[in-house]
Amino acid sequence: MARRTLLRAAALVACLGLAGCSTAVPPPPAADAAAAPGADPALDGPPAGDAWLVPDPGVLAAWERFPAGARPRPLVISTPPRLPDDGFTGSDAKEAALAGRFRLAATLPSAPPPTMRVTLPDGPAELPTLTAEAAVDSLSAASIGSTGPELPITRVALGTATFSSDRGPLPLPAWLFTVDGATGPIAWPALADPAFWPREPSDLVVDGGAHLGPDGRTLAITLPAPPEEGCPGGQLSRYEPAVLESAAAVVVGLRSVPSGVAPGSPEPCAVPAVGRTERYTVPLASPLGGRVLLAPIGVGYTEVQAVVPG
Image 1 (cartoon, rainbow, N blue to C red):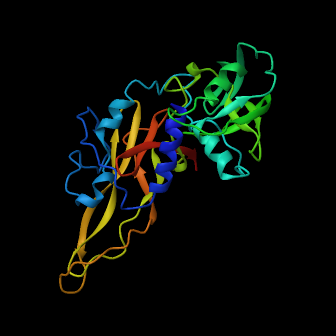
Image 2 (cartoon, helix red, strand yellow; image 1 turned 120 degrees about the horizontal axis):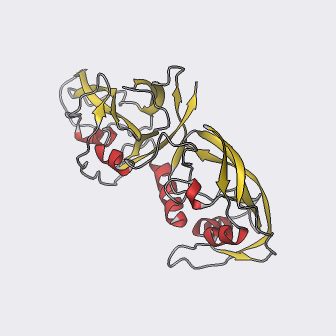
């Protein structure tokens, strides 16, 4: 699962900000969702090229069981492992790491205590731990069909690493793996699955996605900006935030609103697919609280956003 999601995350990074990603947009399933003030519940009318920006009610259904009010609230983090900031010494080592091709060549430390006290955004909590052996197994879950050299793990130590969470950078207890070919330790959370949502940390988090105002219900979020220019005689548009809310999640997207006609005689042309972004202010119907924030980040993809105060 981790290998598959890592490759998916790499594809999404390449897709961010591009208007021409080729993944098809699935039809949105029906869901019981309330629209925020000013949002059109039908969310209809955007041109086909902008359709992927419209919030999909189906993603609310996917999160309907998330316990937003739980204490401690389940952790939602980017897919581990946490790779070294300076990467790898070569492309072969990087490819092997992303594919999960590792070989244990070190003595494993003894098991940690059953629980550890961890400081979370909603306060301290005692969370169940993961053994070094289980972390090695997760780290070494090579993709099906992946072949090639394995990276030796030469040292394993219990420490701390900062992971990208849906509430900003989050230091967590972590198993730190010294690996041949890596410029620094590779980290895997030293916490067991019950601490995370879903029961394994496999949700892509776009770090720094939004800021939450002091009232707890006003978001400032960076999303795509409309094209600066259109074809002569063609329809121009602006983007307006569109919101769907449930008790567990909030989906913020955009809808295209006609704003005029480009000067000149109508003629076909190519509009540059430049990845421009814009900061949008989004009022919510109720305070965000512990709900998960999601937004479209590419054609066919709506993913978790990081929310920080400010």
